[in-house]
Amino acid sequence: MNRPIIAQNITNLSDARYFAAWDVSYLSFNMIPDSDYFLPWEKIEEIIDWVEGPKILVESNSIEYLEKIDGHILSNMFASLPLSKEAFFRTTLDEVTKGLPSGRYIISVKDDLEKILQLDQQTLQGLELFLDISEMDLDRIVDLPHHGLVIQGGEEEKIGLKSFEELDRVYEWLMDEEA
Image 1 (cartoon, rainbow, N blue to C red):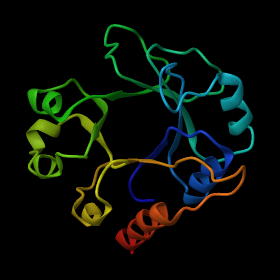
Image 2: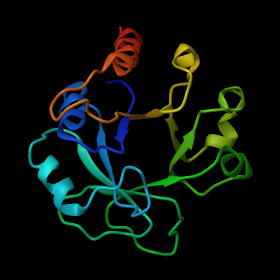
Image 3: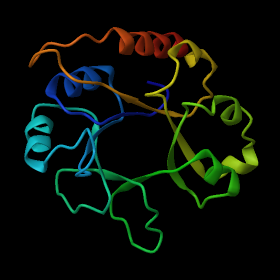
């Protein structure tokens, strides 16, 4: 892929293998206890042992010192802490426009695509934005600026059985974009 992609909230092996076949940059697992996508570390380990290719991220409210991961997705900015692994911070478009230190940031596209399209290079200097399109109207995908993307799978119909029709549309668009 020409742009970095994070497949977030992975909860099953079907999603993990599907996104690994896409050649996404990262698979992200959620360890926030009250999240709908929470997985305990033992289940995450079980899934990542079956997948090769993407780097592994853990989303949590604190820095998890786990050996098998490559980085974190955090909601809090731990600017004063030395991070030994890759770090992505969830934030809002308002925070981006106010100014943020250099780093990788995830923002939702849900209602702000027009504002995102108007961001200027001065505001974006030193920032690597990842656009969370998981709640976006996919008919607007062709309008997306060239930033990293955050996508999401879903639940299996049965273990090992799942439809990927919506995600196939995103994949086809990405492949057309590369052509």
